[in-house]
Image (cartoon, rainbow, N blue to C red; front, side, top):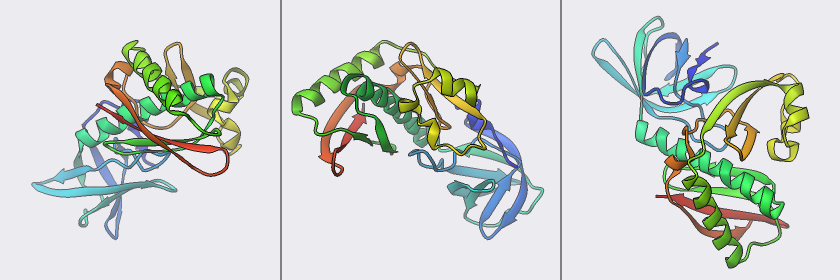
Length: 233
């Protein structure tokens, strides 16, 4: 089983690992900082290097373990250096943290729980249970988001026993009930004084790093569901 190092430290750009398995352009490493696609956050890209050779990491997926899709074959037992496409990863970290802020804000001020989200390197969208946002609502959301970013609130993550999380966290915000019963320990991402939720994604360590937020529009996502689009500058 691959040791998912990105869960503890999101700041690492380069690391060393050993190829445990290699088959049909996919490799399993004993440890990795490459984030696999999931939770609305796209997979990391980058390269693996060994003995003067280089393989592009074009996708990362997690099923029974974490599979790195590469443009070639790497022999099992090879010790490789992994390097993330840091510009892509850092953009995802900024957008994921901003999405947490937005989810908490919409729940607190509009009673609109998040039902889905998708992040990209240059934009993001969020789906919430809500009738319709007016132009005035969107202006209010944008202004409040930028206040929260400017507050420079710290962002931390840690593990919590599921039973404790169910007792102490807002279940409408965390949706712990959607997680399989077999998951007994949760990774919690906390934005100082504002939000705590279960999340396995990567984040910046301070809201100030998100930069200027612009709510770029809305559209209907179906009955009583709204989709908001936003960018970070």
